[in-house]
Image 1 (cartoon, one colour):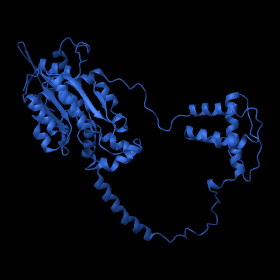
Image 2: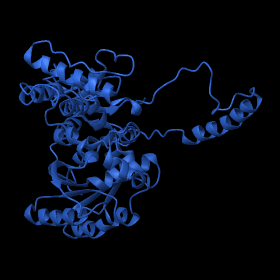
Image 3: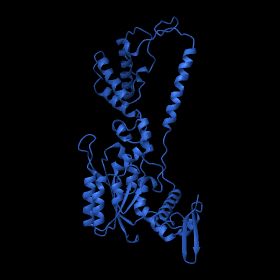
Image 4: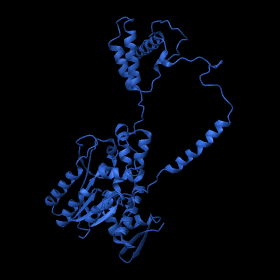
Length: 417
């Protein structure tokens, strides 16, 4: 294997493949296929959003692992980035300077052709960039076996990264080195919901509920009329006069917001108690405002004079719709900045773990650790964090790292937890 000081690495990610494989790994086999329709229709559904969050890919862990082999020359990710499932990785991908390749599926639920496009680009890059020494393929399909074999035949060192249990054995065998995504430093362990316990608990509750129902005194039939029960009227059976009165109130209120003058709705005869003030304006989103005002125009406009129906009422509808807060609260545009000290500490820990796993050595040269940290995050600088040297930076983190100074040599290792 070429020297890591002069090694130049190219990373290719079949992003759809790794996302789906990790989703199945976290939630069970074929889980993504079962949830595909719900994910496509409404990824913000609470249950789906929770499942997607639990199966989030750590892009930084993959790129940091690739950087342990040498300098990253290029990093490409292939996927349909218009899909909401992939769009949530925008911050991670932009932060690691990943080149995004857009692939649109040919038909609904069809493959997007990432394997062919990725293979073509890889072979082209090997001839266009003859100084490439390492090729990292992040995927799990056996379709990439010919690509890995061709890369090795052209003299490149091939590293494969895939999800355990979803990667073809033939792909792992065709690589010079293969690493499971689950075992990469920084990847959080899988935490599965206790589905079986919940099911058994529900099954245990059912006989108890039946026994309690059997012991309960006999209640009157559901269809028997209760003497003291108040009479209720279904919302769908409200009289047209009452509906007209409420829509008229809505239109008048909107006009008053524009003109600054109090407006009153024309009197209407209602066969019941008067509606509470503001009843027609109780809405949950902009669509309700528009629907209410449009209904007000249809009902009230023919009975009112034509002096202020066209422009001001429509302007009021637009203004009211714009002022209504969204049903789903949008995240803040500016995300809170991370603590640079904590970020540097996590970077040091990950670099040490990768160094120990790669070299199988107890102590690592501090210069090699610093070089690896700069590969993973080129913006890292111990002086910018307030330390005179890298040794001082490591000493300040004695809870995770141990430094040994013998003469001019500085050795560091990960402290055992």
